[in-house]
Length: 88
Image 1 (cartoon, one colour):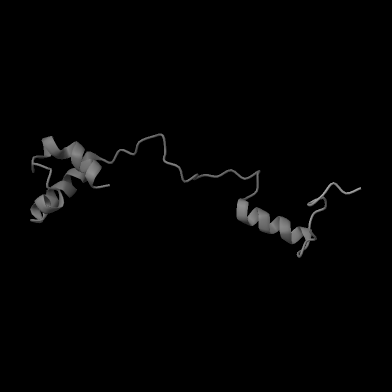
Image 2 (cartoon, rainbow, N blue to C red):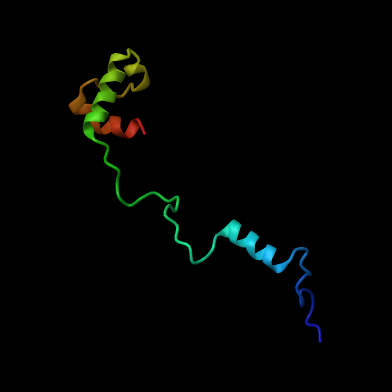
């Protein structure tokens, strides 16, 4: 007895093994663990402040500092937190 449209599945145009392999290739196997999910980490990445300071000084010396970062003062102690945010 038929219950209506969609009662039986459409015939496969590929073998079941090919279908399973393609499915696993596209969506991944369930038993595999993913090392990188693509989501932001809950742990913050803290860059060593020395490298950031060197980048700040180099940018300041470039002559383009106030054009690139017009809201900064040019004083490291005042600008370090804002510079860290702006350069990312």
